[in-house]
Image 1: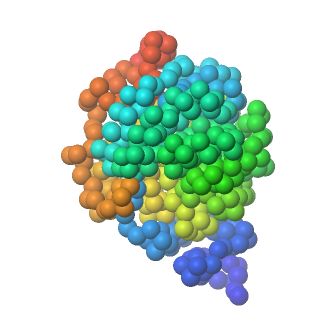
Image 2: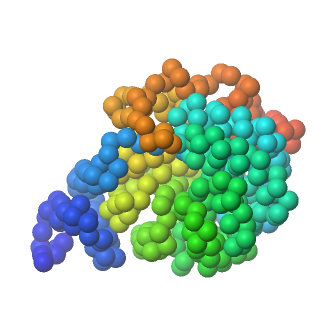
Amino acid sequence: MTTFATQTSTQRIAELAGFVLSGRDLSLDEARELTAVEGDDLFDLFFWANKIRIQRFGRSVKFCSIVASKVGACSEDCGYCTQSKFHATHVTPSKMTVDEMVSAAEEAKANGASSFGLVNSGRGPTERELDWMEPFFRKTAQEGTIRPCATLGELTESQAQRLRDMGVLRVNHNLETSRRHFPNIISTHSYEDRIKTIRIAKAAGLSICSGGIFGMGEAWDDRLDMALELRELGADVIPINFLNAMPGTPVYDRKLEPLTPLEALHIVAVYRFVLPDRELKIAGGREKILRDMQSWMFFAGGSSFLIGNYLTTFGRTPAQDHQMLKDLGLPYATFDEIEHEADPSTARADGPTDGLMVRRPGAMMSLPVVNQGEKLKAHEHGGSCCSR
């Protein structure tokens, strides 16, 4: 076999793409070759990443929505997170009602989301918290119109089984970065703790959503190590988040250089080569980091993305995302696997103040966790809004 050094970059990218398209997994060394692609050759990498996406997933993409059901006062010290009790940020503790969860899920369905997840702060759920969420999950599962998902932190075997029994189909638990880089970001729990929860959830029959955040000072080898770990763990969905460091968090204080749009797309493309049959979900930071190249996330291999707000920051309006897909001529698929033409006229746009997944005028963070403490913070910051 010829090597990267004796071929042109374009030829080698095409050869490696051929391996993937024929069903062979790339090795670590082969994946490492793709990280060295630069200049105009990046566009060849994107071209083949898109070919792999279409072969495995077709042309349609999927939407996912999440809502912060329990916010703030988290016991963990994750260096990127605004919800940690160790960090002085714009977040103040709050908790949703079941009716609010139902309303948020209805908005997500109206916007075309195929999956909807509740996200709780904290190391792991208590039994009382599972009691609180159970009516929502049972109702959503019984209706069968959107996939019920949960991001609750660490799980015991009995908790994972209980979630499955109440109708949860997918659990999100991100690795965040490589095993090597993890201690630079988090100290209150270990990388192995995260892997243990993923294995417990998978053993309970739950689909696994696990990925990470890029731009936290990691090297390419860290990115590749996490990709291979996720491949070995059997994660079904890989969220790709780009760091948008928020004031009050340790990573913000490190003054890290943000990823450029092409660097971010390079990561997506390499992940598509390494994880060809996994759903790559482009999530936090896409507006901030990709900017005018946001629609390129599909050309680089992304197959799904978050629509609506994130956890404690705002997302683009669903109408804007529908318009993007319409302009690209890409359909989207709902939970029933039916394809639909994107239609910005049916998705929520800025303006209404009674929804749970829209920007409230003067608010710094996503609903429903706006409260008096956050309003005071907004006043201190001159009323400006936070972005991802």
